[in-house]
Image (cartoon, rainbow, N blue to C red; front, side, top):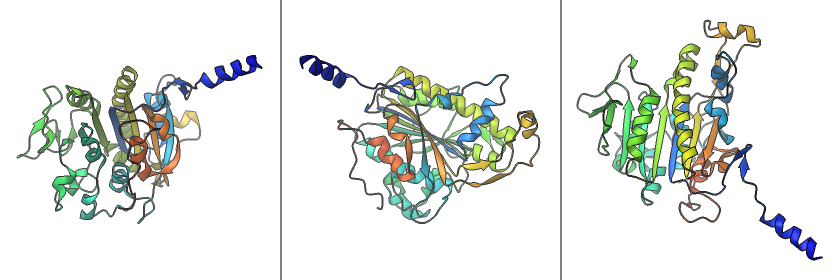
Length: 336
């Protein structure tokens, strides 16, 4: 009998410490959150990276510990636009109205501020319809943008401060800082270059931070059937994601998250020999957006992002863990 008890004791002490066949610690509070929001991306489109190499290779996206999908709908629409989906993800709310009423919603950085997190956003390829800055003109927007560092890869505004990745990156929570290497035709800097330098600046002297990278250039390319341009952008995003994964590997308290919006289905070639012609012609149509969006996660609390759930629940999955001191916001009402 005592041997049976001893075996039971040993079994009760055993713990599963892996996720997706990789070493992983469960229930860790993320003190560093790196969040990529990529418009238009779908998991099948990772083939743009895999099948354009001399030999098949795994991208850093494929090294993510957990993959999930979020339903693309809210209380008012099915297949919401990218702005609405990303805002639902960042506020945990379903009632996104795409109006100035949205400025009353409390974003994730407002909750994190009380726990001494620094928040910065790098935005690329956004226009007036999908930029997070479009709420700035709304009454009461100061509270929404309070203590937020914002860098924009878009045409600089003459009266606004500017930055360049080769120089010391300015921290300015009072104003948007524009990339000096950008103009109306595009940017001479890349997302990965800016990610590396801005990320280092955010982390400098601060143990807790949220860094959100929002890209809309990929979605524009994929929906205009410019697959060569889409692949180039995805290659650059993968470089930035790889840098984030390195940070996660060096710090077990880092969460690396990638979420998408307006995920677009693309009809890829049926035969491998047709692949190299795929980028040269436009017969393959980028069809309407899907009903679900891709989610990839690695690092602290990445186990929360496996499965299928509503996009507004992403917020809670970042901030909630099993009986752990720190970020626990179960009281959030998704309807107001």
